[in-house]
Length: 158
Image 1 (tube, rainbow, N blue to C red):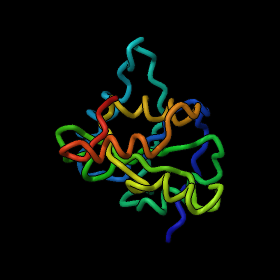
Image 2: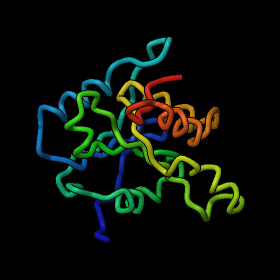
Image 3: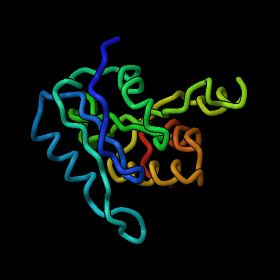
């Protein structure tokens, strides 16, 4: 596994979005524009920390998780991978940062990852996921279950 650059300068309330595909700059501009749109019923201002560094090209989920482990305030990281760039919905890959070692026990981890440790979410859902996981209002598995129930496997909203 390769070492990726450290993630620095992220405010604890900022969504972390990592670009891992560099084949389509227009698609990336579309993704970033969608992520910067006001969100939620109250039209909250979007706060996003983008990692747009070609050193991350093709980064795997495990490589990305290894690179962000030091951020104790990060519950989820969003990857803008090839599938994100190619899909009309630009659904990003949401990945939990919680590890087996951080869980109370094996049963706790199994519940958390019942639908996997990752799921896809449309850009409009990124802020909802990040905010609710950050404050413990909802759990990762609740979002993953909702994505699992979607015909395309994408979290869209509750």
